[in-house]
Image (tube, rainbow, N blue to C red; front, side, top):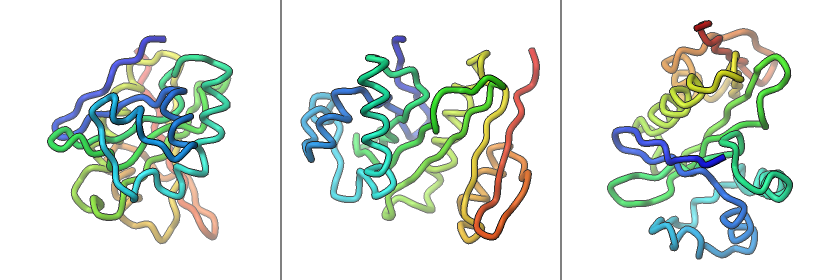
Length: 172
């Protein structure tokens, strides 16, 4: 699948390729430099480091990104990678996909999380295979809960640690 970058007002979402995951795992940012992107020591985040090997294995198998791996969140103005947004895999047999995102500490509270989530939700709405978008966040993560609610997700439940969210796409 040939994926295009997703543009929003201030952000660019760039799909992560096998070459990018390989170089990041080697602590090398040369693939970012080839795309005229830069990042500091804040990105990749700890959470991103946790998923990089999984994404790398998925991309080794699939060869090309489907869009259901993850995307770098880039500030257009500076070409700085400030976070990432992605999925816990391709949609399941019910058409459900789970989204997650993270923004580096110095860029939080500036609306980038919502802008990135809103942009990826618009992309998901063009994918007929996706029927339901799910997410979760820690109960203590009030900013993330506000972003998910603002993006149109509805709370579906809670446990001792997490709030669970869902967005059901309208049938065409």
